Figure 1 (tube, rainbow, N blue to C red):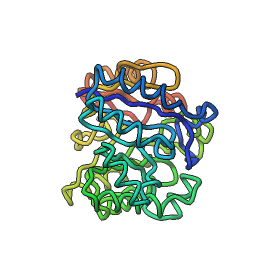
Figure 2 (figure 1 turned 45 degrees about the vertical axis):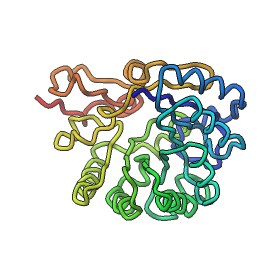
Figure 3 (figure 1 turned 135 degrees about the horizontal axis):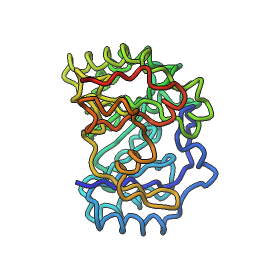
Figure 4 (figure 1 turned 60 degrees about the horizontal axis):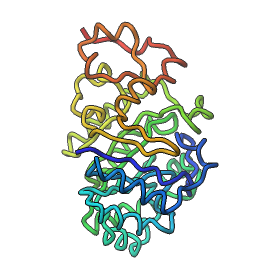
Length: 294
């Protein structure tokens, strides 16, 4: 199953301190007809589509776009969102009726204070209500938490919070230093070695409760006993329909342009399956924390 990631535009009602798309906000949103053309084009090669941004749910035409995707025959229609609009049950019902059948939402802290600080908006209560509404409507909900300096010590508590919400899967994604995360690098990007014990604690909690947890952008040499949680191994083939270009093979793109491996990594047993680190991390901190596994 190939996935089409469609960037509907870059307007957003949050202003996350780690947003990788923040530098694109000045470009606003694509118009309806352009997105209909993109959706139709994506349907030739993909049967799974995700609407992302920016924040797609604040578009006035989002129901129309979802309905058009359904008419194009997509089997999975995912909405990637900060979750705030789903606090309105009527909106949940309407977008489900239009054809959306998977929801990838984001909560970055287990408390209102932490989440709102990271999103720079009064967003926690709405996001939590959104999750609860969608689960009450028996929808598939996948959650994402960006690992950053402000929340890495709380990953076990965040795991417990996700489990209590009853989500179908949750993921911890290590911060990628683009956009706002690049501008705020010193305040956003933690050291892997400091973060790792807390991440492993969160993984152990998820497994204890038989909850599905995934981890993105943390290499297998650091997660050797938890290889089953590595997101990159489980990601479908994906095409990205970005601002003004299409990335036909996202894995190839992130391997060539986005990530790096050290020369020492060639000796690691996981070399072939590992994607390495987001290149901005070793450029800032070096490779001392990475220990190839023989």
